[in-house]
Each structure stands twice: as structure tokens, then as C-alpha cells.
Image (cartoon, rainbow, N blue to C red; front, side, top):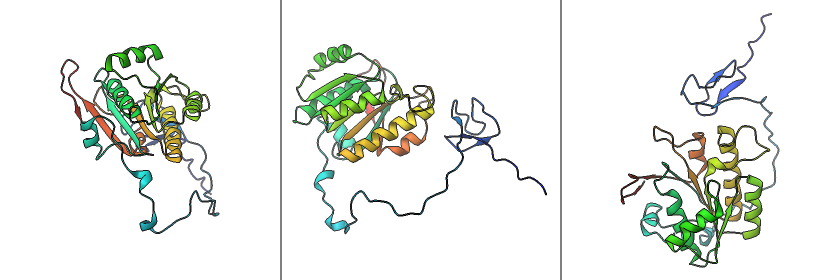
Length: 248
């Protein structure tokens, strides 16, 4: 009797292309570093589990927790359809130097001035560097907390301590965890770190803003799945030496 062919043990996390051995570049979508070894599939359980909250008629759902609040930047509020929504995950992508950190530090400060606790996590710059920018932007407020971290566990510890309503991660590619396979900024790390932070934001009604880098061709770096994990994808564009910036 003929033996059934073995399934390809390696698969691209971007497009699903499979291969019999590991390669550095996907043969289908041409993405670098996206081919990973897939674990043996687990049998799907059909046993009923515990529910987070009971289902109710849609007309009885409370709208107060989903009411948008102003970011303090009028044009950003307009693009977001009213402002920042508790529990929403926003991905802000743009080229280096376009002003992502400056914009989000301004948003965090303006939100803090409304009496809302904001936590800004910098994975690329030291706390003193961010403080210098804050001085220039007049972004100093007692409700704005700042930490320079690149470990997911430390980030979660800061969230537990501060209990923010707005959380800015600058940037998602710089945060890593020793419990996740792959190198910092790699496909697996970015996917798992983003999923963990989004889950925390949803559970605690925190508005989460993730800064994402872009590749040379202008697409968002990291797994394409990242764009599907978040609620909003914003592209921040503009010439480095121009005063004009575009958010779409």
C-alpha cells in the first residue's frame, strides 16, 4: 500500500505558502523571514467553555464604554471618526523621521491634560530623550507617565502599576519576549507581542496605539496579519523637510 506523502512542515505566515524545508524567502509572496516551521495541528475541542459576559439583546448593550474622546489633535479626531475609543487598537505606520513619535507624544499629553492617565512606552529612545521632546512640545503633565522598555513583561508591569486609559507603544518592532521564539522585530515576535497587548487593551478598555515601521516599498513591516489584528490602520506620510503631513 502506498504511503501517504508527508505534509510540508514549513509555511509562510504571510500568504500560507508551504515548503518541505526552511527557506529565507517565501517562494510565493517573496517576503523575507516569514517561513516558519508549523507545529502539529491540535484537535479542535467542541466542549462549551466559560463566557466572559452573558449575551444580551443588542439594544441593551451599554454605549458609554465605547464613546470616543478627543485626542487633543483635531485633524486626528476627524480621521478617526470622532477620537480615541476605549479598547480600540490603532496602528500608526510611517517612515523614520516623519513625526510619528512627535504626534503621539502630543496626543498622549493632550489626553493627559483632560485628566486621563496616559502611558507612553518608548522602545527606541531613552526616557531622557523623550523628556527633551516633551519639553519642546509643552507635553509635560502629571497624568502622562513615561517608561523606556523593550521587554513585554516589563511593559505589562508598567500597565499594572499605572492603569492607563491610553497606552502608546513606540514601536511594536522593538518590544520582545523571551517566551516567544524568534529574534526581536521578527515575524513571530511582532505577531505574538501585538496580539498580547491588544488582548490586554480589550480586557481593560485601554486605547492602544502601536507605532509600526514601514519597509522600503512603503508597506508596513512585520506580518500582514498585524494589520488585521488592529481596529484601525493609519498611514502617516509626508516629506521630512516639509511642514505638511498626511494621515490616511
